[in-house]
Length: 387
Image (cartoon, helix red, strand yellow):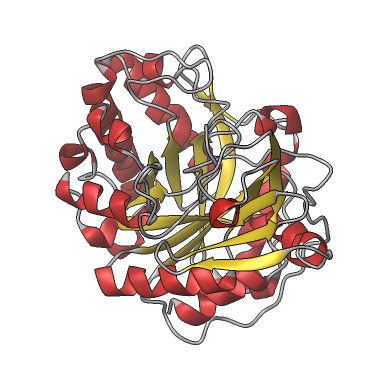
C-alpha cells in the first residue's frame, strides 16, 4: 500500500500522513536473548511500511501483524509491494530475540477490502482465497493470517458489499481455517502450535448487525477489536478517539471500548478471544468551543492525525498546551485554550487503565495500530502493565 492509500484509511486502520506525523525510520536490530516468562495476555503490534522493530520491542510483543496483503478482483490474496518479502524476512529474524514471537499476515484493511465480498461469495471463490492466502503463509514461513475485511455487508472505501456477506463471512473464515489445518498437518503445526486465524473487527453495533459473530468466532483464535476512531475529522463534534468508558456528556456519541467489548460478549464471543485495540496516534481539531476544554464541541477545522511520537515530543511541549484527563471516560487530551486546539490521543495513563480493564474482564490482550508511530513509551507501558 502506498502512503496515499494508507492516508485514505481515515476511518479505521490507518493514520493520515501529514507534516505533523513522524514515522520512525531506522535499522533493524536483532538481539539474542529470549523472554523470561510466557505472557498471560497477547500484545499484538500492527506493522505497516518500513519495518523498524528492535529486538527489545520484539521481546515485548507476542505477535506482529504485518499489514497488508491485497485481495484482487479475482479473489486472490497477493503481496503488492516489492518490499513485502524483505519486510517479512526481517520480521522472522526477530525470532532470534523472541523465539515465541508470532508473525501474522494481515489481509485487506481500509484500502484493500474492495473485493472481499466477491472472494467470500461462492465455494470456489472462498477456496481460491484460502488457497492463495495459505500459500503466502507457507512461502514466507509465517505463523498465521489476520483478515481485516472492512466491512462485511456495509460500505468502507469503495468496497463491494452485499446482504449475504453476513453468512459468507463465516463461511470464508471456516474455509480458511480448513486450509490452515491442512497446511498445519503437512508442516507439523498442530495443537498449541497450529497456524493462527484472527480478524480485525469494527467495534460498533453496525459491525455486529452485519456479521454473525456467535458463529464467526468459532474458527478464530482472536478477534482484534478496532476500539478507536470513535471521533475524528468526519465527526460533527469533537470527542475522544478511543475512550475506555462512555463519556459523561449525554448529548454526544456514547461509543467506548468497554461498550464494544460488552456488545461482542453479548453477541456470543468468549471474552478470552477478544483483543482490545488501542491507537498509537491522535486526532485533532482547531476552532473548537471552549466549554468542557474543547470536548464535545463544534469545530472549524480538522487537524488530521499525529503520531504519538510527534504528540509527546513536539506538540505537548509547546507553550499553551494543557494535558487533560477525563476521569469518567478514562481518556487523555491536549487542550490549547488560547488557540482553541484540541487533540485526543492515547497516553501511558490511559493505557494503564485499559491494561487493568483487560485483566479484570478476562480479555485476550491488547493490539495496537501502528508500531512506527510510537517512541517506545506506549509499548513499554503495555509490557509493564499487561503481563
